[in-house]
Length: 558
Image (cartoon, rainbow, N blue to C red; front, side, top):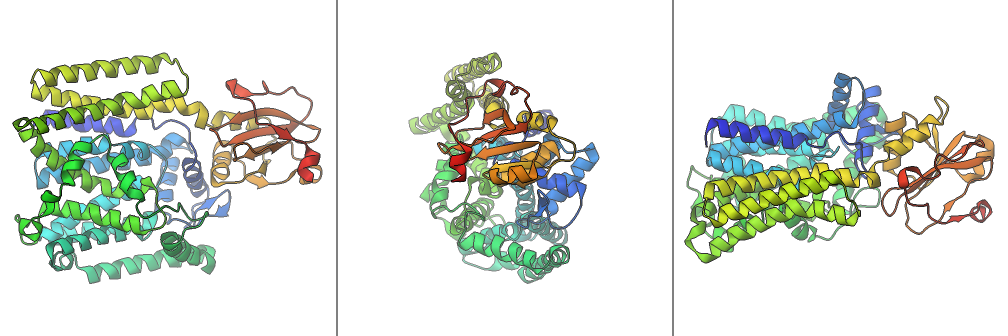
């Protein structure tokens, strides 16, 4: 592939990484991370805070980074916060390209980068305000440097890059970053039937470095918030989160959770994924170590991916989001298989059928989400309909080109269609779904009715999302209250939230009147009430569905 074509593809991946980053924060994770970063910007510290309360789940590096972007851009915004994820995503794609070019060829590097950029999990979570894209960048850097160490290349520089990346991963999300890489190296050593690959990364020196860096974080947390905060960070959010999560520490899932989550994460690239899983592909074992002593790139990439999945499966806390760090090495492996497959796909009917199946998957990703959103939301949005038509034209051209045997043009059309699927997911579907998830306009209406400096009094369900989104949008703290407290505290306005479908929410006594009400998805209802005789602000804003049934104040008190 020419230099110009490579630069064009990388430029397209840069655009893809930042598509749709300007939307407002959505629940469940974005309001929390955005507000913690805002508070870090306003009052820099080691221990993050949420709604002015210590939040000792994660180390501070991610929040320092987003706070730094806020400082550079002159204030908090969802765009500035999400730009950190977009930057981490593009740098990861660039690393994947360079890594693939070094180990295999420029074609493998580009296929890996395009495949990763257009996979469902990567699309979904690198366009969100979350920590994991930054963690993925650091673990990918460590994995790349680790491959050089295992080969015996550039020992000093690779060793420095390896442990610097692991340290940054540690300071981003805790011990999970270094342990993910260690688990992959151990699986590789088992596959090689030798500990030689592990010795080449200087494990004892590495353990000393990581213990020291962990001690530095713990000491800083101790100085900032005391021993209870250190215990919460080290014990609750590492040990308990791994062995026995509670409602406060994570998502309890069965050990086989990733057996279904991983195929969804790599969609639409199921054909190369199936090829990698062939038992015959891995029967050669250590005899495949051909490039240099104790190193074979496909075995190394497969071991990294498998080791990470095994570790994540062993943890009781599971989310598909946690798969992000293992996707870059996995997609390098898939790309190497895909390039081989492209060369021999016409040699049998089965292999030709696999090509058409892969085309069908990409078409499904490009057309399916927008069509589903239009149908589910009962929308006739003209932009979405036009985009759906354009995708249909590209898909039709791809089918015609492939049928006529124009291989290079068909492969290019497949890439264009895959990139179009990203636009469909992060621009069009987000645009159609925004009214269900975007709380910003509703909270700004509340903010305009309140006196300067007053906190937001909240009645009902309290969660991290509301403790994040309310201060991020309004700059006001959230203060929990009850109906019985209103005569004493007499706040000008009150926010009511109910997070359980079908459960009633309280009506407030006079002189409070409901000025606005919104439902955000099937299980989140919010309303704000203010003192005064002004008529409700359209009662229900922007065509929102009516609020659920109410119970009287007397019934609530009982």
